[in-house]
Amino acid sequence: MKTRQNVLLSRTKDKPNKEEAFNAMLLRNKGLIWHICSDYNLGKVWRVEDCMQEVIVSLWRYFDTFEGRSSEQTWIYRVATNTMLMLRRKDDKHLATEQIDVHAEIKNMSYEANDDNSQLLCQLINELPEENGMIIRAHLDGFTYKEIATMTNLTEGTIAMRITRIKLQLKEMFKKESKEDI
Image: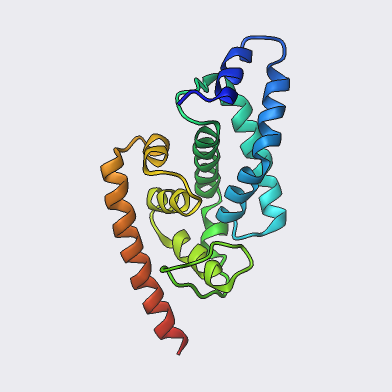
C-alpha cells in the first residue's frame, strides 16, 4: 500500500532532509501517538508524556526501516505499541498495580477517554495478555484486519478469530465486574 506519504518518506530516508520528513510525519501523527501512550497508561498525563518521548526516540531509531509496504499509521502504531509493551515490562510492577474505577459495555461502546464505560474497557484490556490487548486496541482504533495482521505478523484469519474471542472474553470480564459492583 504505497501512499504518497509513504513514497515521500522512503525517498527522503537517505537524503539530508530525513529530519524534516521525520518531523512532518510526527506532526501528522502526534494524535495517534498520544492516543496509544494514553491507552497504555490509563490517561495519566505525566506518564503519557514520558512514554511519548520514548516512542518518538523509537520511531527515530527505526525510521530508516520504514519501507512503505504498510501505511505510515500502521508502522507508527506497531513501533509505538512495541515501545509501550517494552516499557510496561520494565515497569510492570507500577503499571500492574494501577487501577481506575470504571464501567464498560462491549457492544456499541464509545472509546472516548473520559467516558466511564471506556475507562473500564481500558482497565479490562490491560488485564488481557499483551498481544491480545494490542490486537483489540488496534481494532477499536479502527485499523483493518489486514493492518493489524501487518502489525502483529499474524494472518488476517487469525486476527478475525482473535478479535471475536477477545470480545467474548471482555464481555465475560464485564459481566463479572458488573456483578461485583452490585
